[in-house]
Length: 169
Ligand code: S3P
Image (cartoon, rainbow, N blue to C red; front, side, top):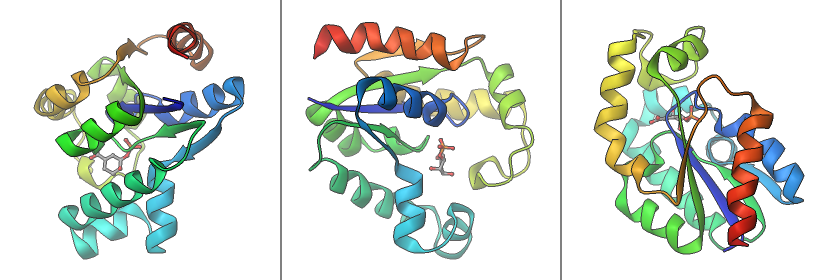
């Protein structure tokens, strides 16, 4: 149970929080999207535009499965990982799943300059973000703990996670 998976919608802070959390725990930090980019040799945007979302999801699952073999990791997952029930089962079985959430208004603010996230399609609005989150809510809720990052800095969030994780390790 020594891997910590951070799930959550784009912009909830999984990578920034994950890096600091890994440092505090003395664990390795892995960004699942970076594993995909490295494996495919092209950007997430290119994968979506050339091979489509289904292909991306297949590679995403494969990369997740590779990480399940390892221990003492903090994994920042992509915002869509929790859509697949198999991914959720594997993460729950092999580690602690921490779901980060934030108010759609705050997410919009964090994501407004974004160009690398194909699912945002350049048409970003609070309504669109709220709709995507509600479609994925069931998957995001499948976590050991959920933490609202709205109005908190990375340190605040890491501190909250550490209190929980230390009670579980
Ligand atoms: C996605 C989120 C992205 C990335 C891809 C798809 C999603 O990761 O995996 O663009 O479906 O929400 P981040 O959540 O790290 O931005």
